[in-house]
Length: 197
Image 1 (cartoon, rainbow, N blue to C red):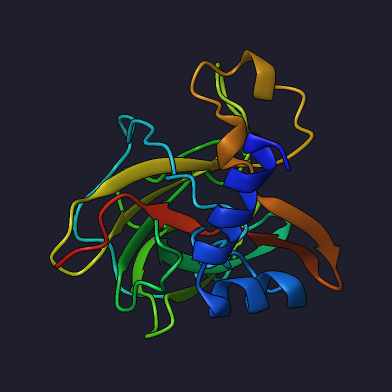
Image 2 (cartoon, rainbow, N blue to C red):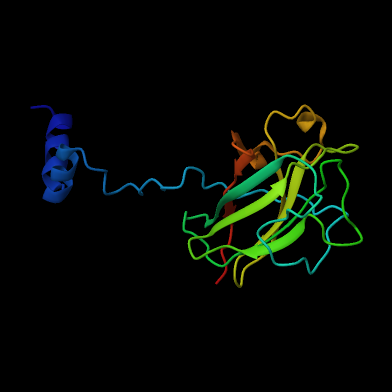
């Protein structure tokens, strides 16, 4: 028997029995970390708030108001830690342009904040924002976990011809969007570097 083969057999005998049993049955290698359950544990990138943020927005989950024009959008998702754990009670503050690409600077139209539930879930009813000079369609958002740092970013729509020309556009911030009975449904999960403490 060659020296290499003898070394290999000796090493095999040194392995614990549970390890060999797990390997034989096709179970995960106990020496490797488990694969995270969430599909994407990359941290959500920051993007500037821009000049149109206003503090003290009203608490609400629907930005729809009488007389507000535009295609309806229902945006939902979760706030997660980098370890794929839900971040309950996170604060989300949304603001955006109207269907014509205009921001309300006098009041709080198309502005509002809400708290994620205990599973980190949020849901927002709004309208499709219009593009304006130099910018593609987008929704601004600030996300802050309880006792944690603030994330300021923007969400983008897929397939927009202005995406590539917008210097703030990030492909990682494109929402999943699909048609619905009354408008569009959109989804985006925020992944935070630090989820509070």
